[in-house]
Amino acid sequence: MPLFNKKSTKISNPSPPMTKDPHHPAYHDNNNYKNHPIPTAPTIQQHHHHHQDSMSMNGGGAGVGESTVTKPQLVFNCQLAHGSPTGFITGFASVKELYQKIAECYDFPMDEILFCTLNSHKVDMSNLLGGQIGLNDFIFAHKKGRPKEVEIVKSEDALGLTITDNGAGYAFIKRIKSGSVIDRIQHIQIGDHIEKLDGINVVGKRHYEVARMLKDIPTGSTFTIRLVEPMKSGFQGIAPRKGTAGSKQGKQGYGSGKETLRFKANGNAAIEDEHDDATQSGIDAINSLLDSFMGINDSELATQIWDLGSNKINSMDFAEAIDASDLEAFGFTDDFIIELWGAITDARQGRYKK
Image 1: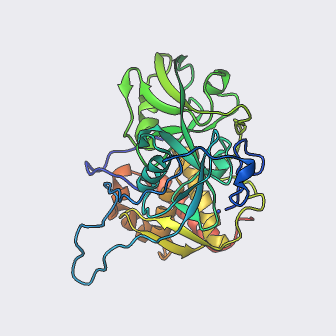
Image 2: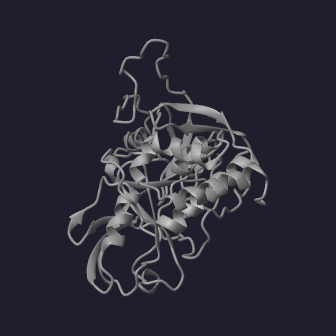
């Protein structure tokens, strides 16, 4: 089955729980700083500069009957994953704005951030920040570390990679299939950012574009991949290479709130109730299909697909809704649409066990 069937030239850009980790090497108790002296700073200075990016609607002028987007003034705790004092982040309505706020807080360029994890300083893809943040979540930002170039012989059609992106222009490796071509190359790890393919810069491309480029490399040929790994502390851990799509690990007691701050494709961030079990099961199943059929992982894309199908009564209405949305540019095949619809109906009827 082809990865993508081109159906339109329209450009698609679908958008994409808070306590401190006492095992983190740079753990700080905000009420006991005398035991952990903080560098003087602008290091943890709270900045109030309003960053505006292509996803933000602020200042764009609301139409008739539309209200101006306002950013929820919530304060989130943040640390750098390799070690830092605790900073306080607020006033963002998109992933890009969040990265900008973190970069301002710690006084380094925004493009140094590869991705963020929630409630874990480890390179743990089960806790990857996606399209929403729980109101009690603690954010850990992973910065760029060591670059590396690896020459790969594409000896099989599938390389065994699942690719996701950070919502701000960086695609990176979310999962490596056990026994695959990539699994046999120990220098390539989960969390590595894919910067170039055969000298072609892929920064700024979405994960599905990078996945398509890798898929289009002829089987039997040799290519070079340039990667940038996340910066690690002396105690940093890396999640296992294995793992099934859509699998979730426990939150280890972090956060108890049922509300999340969800980033919308139009740049608006809204506080919403946590998804019920049926909805979350459906979204996880859709993301599993994206992983299996397309080698990409995107919880926000999966949520968007769920939203389009959740109120439809048959697969034809669902297919029409896909074609009428910005997802039309993906060129999903009819068979894949049926698979997605099956995941939606199975979740509705409670066939997935949590």
